[in-house]
Length: 158
Ligand code: MN
Image 1 (cartoon, rainbow, N blue to C red):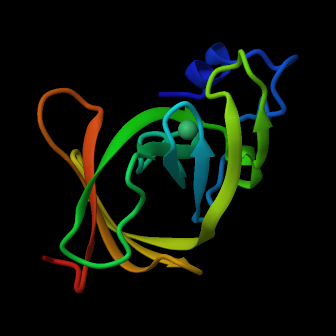
Image 2: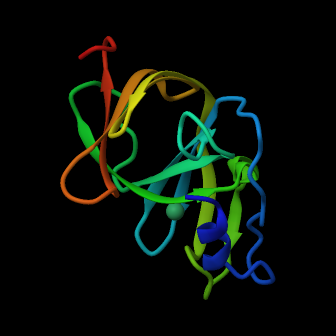
């Protein structure tokens, strides 16, 4: 997935969001944006190549209705959404009514991460944010490609 899908969904004359572009190199940042859209949710974004191990660097993105758990055991639904441009990592502000995702966006947490391990249907990462610290797993479930669970683990390998 490239950021073309992201760009097609938006009218850049009427939203302050960046048009953006992909990049060649990742500095392994993450962000969680609290998005007061029609349904409040948290957007979890990881700066990674679009195929994880190769490809242009984008923000791999998931919408997490209940937010990212700060303690182990809780598993929260994370719905994968279109890759966003890297410059979206600093975006906050108001997406005006009538636009895709209309509503306020604020930065809930940000920091660096380490990609510990990955496969076709999972990512193991260590987050180094202000609120989110420690080891997390994202794992696909069910049919299709969109539904993932995100949860915190005490040690990787769990
Ligand atoms: Mn959103």
